[in-house]
Image (cartoon, rainbow, N blue to C red; front, top):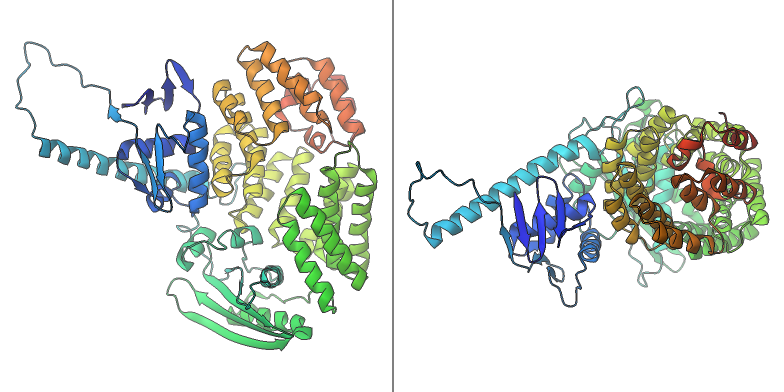
Length: 624
């Protein structure tokens, strides 16, 4: 089947979109969106319909749809202010306003056998067209469901290979609960950091109960502020119970309302209201978590809820929660505010181990994003903070998790990092973030089957984490399981449309699958200059465009700080090994974060037998 849309042609057999003889490379989600709009033209397709047809089997927000439409418009060169192809109605949906028609004709009948049929009436043509659209929608839904069942939601790995299933179709354990963000009901609506912090504390405490499956913060908070039913949330997260609640703060008084809902029948298993003075907040957390655990009959699991390693200083705790909220923004300004808040909390309570652990990670990422090439004092401070957390609370998994990660990324102390992360896993095996960091270390060491298995465990606990999803796909590519990586990258982008790293890796996958035009179109969409220049330099080279490739590389070299590993990767892609090794040595001396992946990075696969490569691995304490 082929379609003509103004000057565009769409071949559904090859899934190629063309214009004036040129191919327009579209990621799969953009292509699927375009096809749905074309088949429905000129009718408006509602946001709900687009979510179901383009993202079958997962819950996405209207913002995700809008972001994908923007990416499609950019690829087509369509101006939303004066659209040629796609128009939108705010809050309702989108429609293809360009003239769309099928252009593939049926084979002509031979003269000897041809018969003249009476012309179909306009009413019959309309009925036939409506029937075709209905059948197309049913077909897309069926294929979407099959793909969702096959690719989008991971399940346990067997022998290092990923197999997949949808949690909604799998047997959901009775011993599973999602803690949703508590709602700030305070009069001034200024206690969101506090209500979010309470939810995070409950997730952390409940995840330490053995055999109780608790989705991590990223997945539970994904639905915050979205118009999604409890049933949809539970289906996406694969849980049997949901805990929701609210926080109302007035002066020095706090009222927390919590209720536990069994999803399959909607019954309230348990609910409670707590009125406390603010100096009793830690007792409130223990009361709520203890009541939920009792309601779920945790005693049958043989689990014991451990005491939280916190503080008795209420103001320090408030600052800690504010730091956590800022850290979760995952950008430079957020890390800076997090560092300030954690340091202020520690000034009030010098024995606050959890604040030291989170300060270590905020300091690590802030130092990695500095304008200077090397920020050794910042990294040293991060390591010292993590060690302080361990010294203050030897039973706190967060301290070992933070130190293990800092050792891995900064010190290349992989043995020490593995020891720390193994300890963290032993203390809290149900923490998705600990599992993820452990998987990262295994991947860095080149232990890909183990890294894939560990990351899949993390994804099972945090199924809507774009970071975990993207990293699992990265490991699959390194393990040459390209077909399984693509839907994971696309899921990461569906969950977090602004994930520049997932977009870059999807472009890399197109290059590895010998689709440089598609890769170039993807790289051009990146809002991060490092990723855009690196990707374009590689893609232009693969297309035989030496001059544009060199111009992009020169711009990359001129950047401050200089992304040494990325530059080495471009030279390696262009088979300029000597220059690639020069930049790798610089990356090592500057502790460029990218070089951590040297052992499994596909850019350097053709250099692995070179003596210089093996010498660099040895210098980095990596096994050959």
